[in-house]
Length: 135
Image (tube, rainbow, N blue to C red; front, side):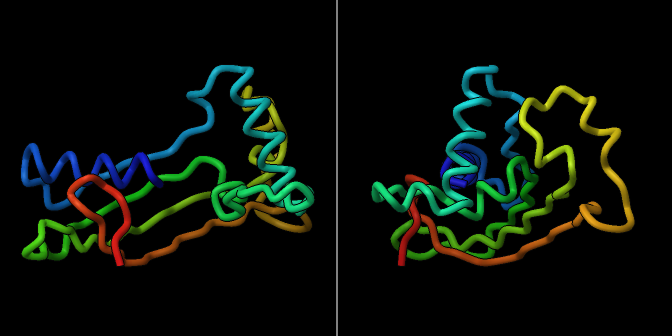
């Protein structure tokens, strides 16, 4: 989300862009980056990283890749933006397996144990002109 926040702030600064779409995609990473991300995600989700004071973002670890629609709701006098985000994601068997090579797609299914889960989350937050979260 940090990159998406910066994208929102940049879009506002350059174009006064009130709304748009952004995404975070693991499949755009190189193979070594994918392996590292998968290992970090599994350590975070299992709680193992807490043994050495890890700071894994468990929500992002669970979501993996996701799409975000954003809307600038207002602008504060100090230039901060109040932004509403709507994040959508499908958690499925493909998401649970490392590699992201497409063959996992055949394991996705709509019924029974391990079925696909469709998530949607909406929240509003304030970000500064630099894209950093503000109180």
